[in-house]
Image 1 (cartoon, helix red, strand yellow):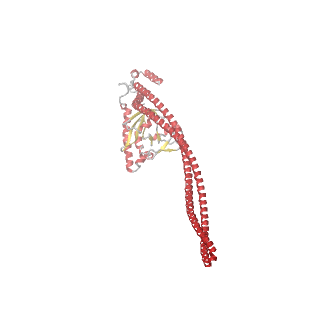
Image 2 (spheres, helix red, strand yellow):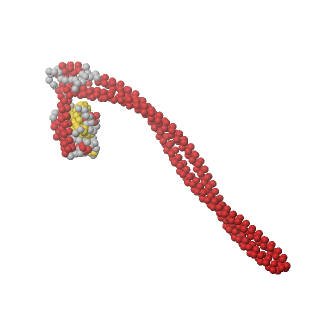
Image 3 (cartoon, one colour):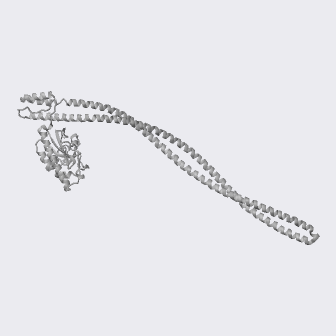
Length: 487
């Protein structure tokens, strides 16, 4: 760059353009970039190149100044947000610490519950065994009672026989006593025997009745005992089954508690990692806050540095900028009218025109894309873009870009058939690309009256780009951009 300036100065000296040399020196000394050819002197190649150089430099510094202002405006907000982030990070860290402690307590509680469940399971097993033993004893008692009841029936039958014998003996004694009376004195001894036999029969019958009563009471008691034993057996069997089901349920609960304990261990590990991340975030928030302060100081320094330069008050004082602005404004209106007419005619639906779905075109580098509206643009835009691009010899391109910087239809000279040579196609075929460089990202997304930017194109040239927004109805579609150089 220094050699270039010396070359310019050397040519100025050789050409005798002393006045221009003095003006350049004085303006550079005073950081005044508002350069124009001295009044009364004819414009020369050197003066045009100097004008372009000063213009490029002044607009680059204007962009840097605007960017420093934007950063300076955003840094306090960033600092506040960083402060809030640090506060929130501390609160999050405190909350996570509390959760971690609660998880530890819960884990300990689950471990205690698991141990107690194991003890209850063992007690349930013992109770089940006891219930089984009681059920077996009750079953044996019921069997014994049934046997006693059976034998009581047999004893009752024997008593019935005895009672029958006693009755018959009593009848026989009565008959013997009658016969003894008929016999007179000879039958007196036999009558005494018959009387004794009768008394014996009476006593036997009474004894039989007593035994029958006792057997009846015993039979009733045995029956009740057998019924009670059977009921006891059923209760104990049901209790055993219940204890078995309870044991199974408690085993399942113990497994779930064990699983929850394992989950809590995993949660505990994750919380520990989150705590570590929280501490790191808190440290990072502190460092970001420090860097934000440093950025604020650097931005202030940058603003002070660029403030040394005196820039043109209005970029549009430059004829080419003003011409590009008028051209872009008129072209944007024409595009807006044309696209609105396409919507009204049904040539494309609204969601198709504003689609942001990009379908890659195979084997293209840089990548190219088809959209729902690019073929319509190939038909409608050239009648607007081509006259604009050809209106001035110094205009490099005049094209439309949507909100994402996608150019559906480039100027014809930059939409030549692909050759397969990347270097050649980079220049000759620039259509259907998404231009995501610093300028390309903004030309379709801004809604400023105009945006003037200077940049180095991917083909190497220093280029100005002036863009104005395109609205279709009330909806922002993109922008019309004009590219050119000052010399």
